[in-house]
Length: 444
Image: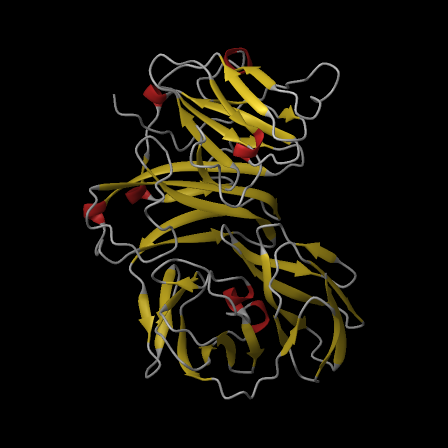
């Protein structure tokens, strides 16, 4: 029987699991009878509450399982996923999946296989294969608040959403040249993380298809996608993640173009630095528009991160975005209003700063709304601190890594520490008063 997935699941009833005498000691094996943990919940689809693991690389054994059913494990985020020999398949973020072969009822793996390098906790989830279907992606690929129910809500209030989707390739206009674009929509402010992966019909990750690159899907009849979003905070409880399959458009340096939502846009190779000039943004995010967020710049061939794309200046008419020189084509995503854009040579007229792992003070001239700074030492796990006498100001930090990208705000007096798989690349100081001021940043 063909295995299928359910994308909109009921809110799971959670079962508290306690270990007598506290958490296991370091290195002590963890044995869990999944039949007791999951069947007592009384739902065909279920996710447990956290199960604690001691420090060190601990052996974990799950028994009481049923072959043919689909099980998920929610561990802790790990940059590269488990080693090839691990019996669990890494989907992305902190999620792993396995299906037991016929006749088997037990699985063993180590805590490091699910990202638990120094202790921590994990959850186990179950979904009955016979009752599940992939949602038809042609009808929309959306998960999130007020659209689907969370898989579970963590102790800190963060909500985790998941979905599995199937797309008939014959419905794609040009399957030989496509991209999958993520769009996060919400009102007000919000924070969290999101990810997607190509999977097979059993839900296991397909590593041969590069998520962020330009894709040739013409050899496929059907493709399957897994999406996940964790909402840490959203002002109006309306954060939604959408996936879109698009044909990217090219912005040529010898003519203008329009960018619109949702869209993915290519910038062809250039030996010189360029400005992307975006017109008509004077009243949107203070003239920054959606470029206030990271737009996932990447190489078209591999999907590998391309750093340094950030706002450089806001004028009365335009936003100017940095496009560093690049020897092969790059692309970026856009989910804002429809606007005209053009590529022009970088004439060096915009003042920028640079710094490494140090403390450095910058002077912002009067009338300047954003002051860009490039980080020369893009190490992982850096801590960034800001101090300034300017009121109502902040820095917006852009970061990248093998498994993620995005932006973080750092307010005066605050420190933000990047994860071990995130490298701080650049930032801009947002000077809302436009008065002359100084700001000091420490990177350590």
